[in-house]
Length: 331
Image 1 (cartoon, helix red, strand yellow):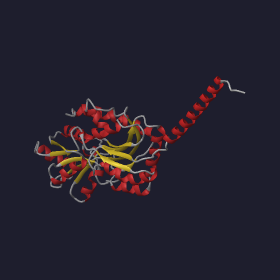
Image 2 (cartoon, helix red, strand yellow; image 1 turned 90 degrees about the vertical axis):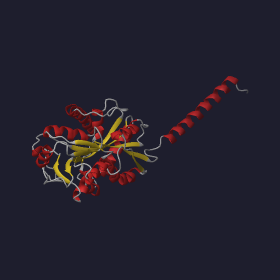
Image 3 (tube, helix red, strand yellow; image 1 turned 135 degrees about the horizontal axis):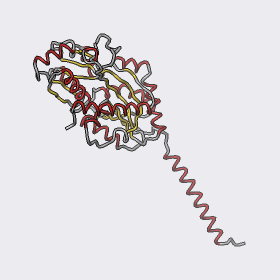
Image 4 (spheres, one colour; image 1 turned 120 degrees about the vertical axis):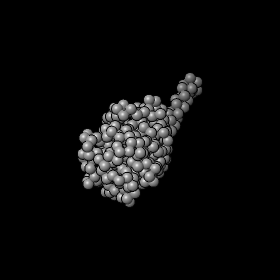
């Protein structure tokens, strides 16, 4: 009995649709590979040797082991971290571009009217990794061992002393500008391209004063190449129990703390952000890593992405107010 041509056509069409659906299902299964399936780049938007670079290299081996993929660190030292940050902000939202940010991440929006990215909208917070006090530091040839002695020297010779920072309109620039006004002293600002060059400039005597994280300066302090005269923590830091705070040295309420945190591109799937958060939370609590952090004067933080996001929002507001008070803006 001959088949109705119409029925045959319908059957062939249904078979073709079924084959297409099967192929599509297989293709979707292949493309939905588990994260991560290829190397991940970790952008450090400053020179090697700075605070966030040190943290990146401390956690890199364990994070590679946990994720089963290489973590490629890329240093992008330009425009106070803006260039490297912008690269991650504009990357594909797939978790393969990470940003190891420093406090400058929340300072830049306060001093730059036009950034190529939005610090909150374009970047997804992953985890606050650690905090440390900023140290007030002098070259050993400066005959001052306390804040009061340094202020007396600076007042006796207005404009004689230079201070170095990781860059113009950086956190250190804002802090020293504010503190100088409170202290009633005048110093010349010398911006460097990152924390490590600013430390080396202070060691060499190109500048006599700086405010720096222990992560970037502790080795030189321990070697006697630099002298810490005060800590910016609200209370005495357990890493520096004999070092007075700036607040107890005649400037009540003054606080200067640095932080390091991990971001990825906004829009990255929540499960990827949560995976990264869980792995880094675990890594920074490993005794070996915690000991290395302790050697650098850094206190592990941790927490959830939401908690880090709330922290970033508070910091953005804080530095906006500070920039206005210090009258500091990027040129």
